[in-house]
Image (cartoon, rainbow, N blue to C red; front, side, top):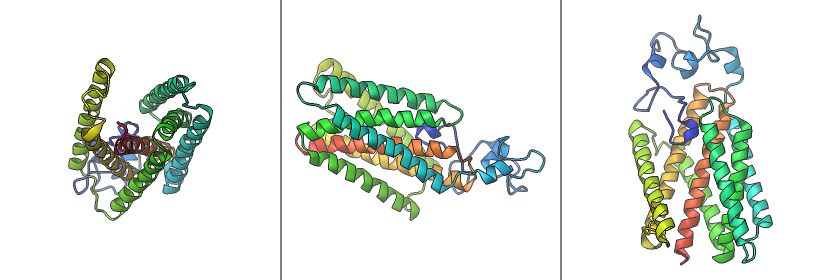
Amino acid sequence: MRSSNPVFSRRGFSRDNGGYAGFDAQQQAGTANNPYAANPYATNPYAADPQTGMPATAVRTNAMTMDDVVSRTAMTLGTVVLTAVISWVALPVDAANIGKSYGIAIGAALIAMVLALVQTFKSKPVPALILGYAAFEGVFLGVISSATSTYIGPGVVIQAVLGTMCVFAAVLFAYKMRWIRVTRRFYGFVMAAAMGFMLLMAVNLLFSLFGGGDGLGFRSGGLGILFGIVGVILGACFLALDFKQVEDGVTYGAPREESWLAAFGLTMTLVWIYLELLRLFQILSGDD
């Protein structure tokens, strides 16, 4: 399965089973007679002995575990929170400093985007890039959250944080209960919806830059509320795709280093959800 998260787009851990998105045909070859061929890493030189088809010792002893994913995710999210708190304190958004603080926040966001793109096209995870992304993303979130707290009220930030935690917990529970099944159809729908959503937001941003205000109005008023809800729902769908990738990685013996990519993907998704909720609560509070 290919995830919506770009960090997973070059990897897949599951085999075609009951409608789940799978691997290329050459990776499926021989599965009927070889119980180890179902492992997608069976065609990978670091995963299997080419003579016996048995998983390599390195993979068996260094396979990704759920504890690995949890610890790496805690590190990336912890970095985001730490730098967000530091930037909140060090970069005030009062009248005298708001321009400087916003400039630093935008620069940090651009750097975070570049680091994320570089990691996306790397063949292997680079922890320094992932943690660097988390650090700069935290700076951006800290300034935006500080501005929201200053000009709208601290309750909006608290609501967005609690909302993000609730969405994560709800999707995880629904996924564990198998109320959400990540199939090809589900994946295709989420990808199509996400591309449409981001295209509309990009068009709205262009109109706002050249025409002023909120462009086409997709991020304010009634339409803003609607698109905010859609953005949160898409984030929840991304979480389900991420959970599927983590589950398949653990099940099929992905190398331990892949846990960094799992943490990277989960962090990006949670940042998405937080920003969508922050904007949604801003609108609901009466500030468009």
